[in-house]
Amino acid sequence: MASISKTDLVTHISCSSGVDKATVRKIFDSSLEAIKTILEAGQEVRLIGFGSFVPQKSKERQGLNLHTKEKITIPATTRLRFRTSQELKDRISKTTARSAKTSHQKKTVQPKTEQVKATQTEKRKTLTLQGKSKNA
Image 1 (cartoon, rainbow, N blue to C red):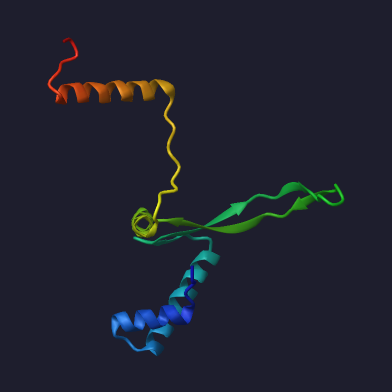
Image 2 (tube, rainbow, N blue to C red):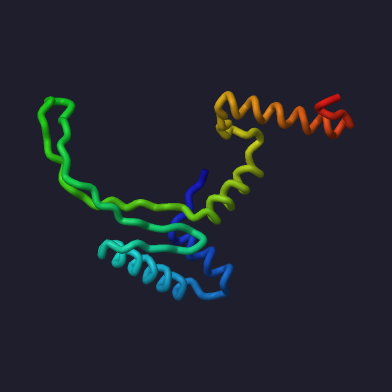
């Protein structure tokens, strides 16, 4: 899969909006800088319909140097997490479903009792549709 560069993205926005590339680049750069500043302050950035950037603090903890087996202290840090919006997830899954020739999604496994109940319900529906009743 090919990746899109910042220049490609600016060109695409410019073409779709009718605004010149220089203006789009300034707005794009200003937007990214604003997002960085907000994240540096430890605040969440929510882009409705796209997702949220969430800074998460991790505590200092003990680790192990695998080469020397020596205990080390891993310092506290702030990590950045991106949570995809449901709208974007749905849009991407529709796109990939259309392009995929076969489905490689995992099947959900139901507990045995739920499988039996589901099978019995399906049999009842089939019998009812065929005009036979359960008591017959």
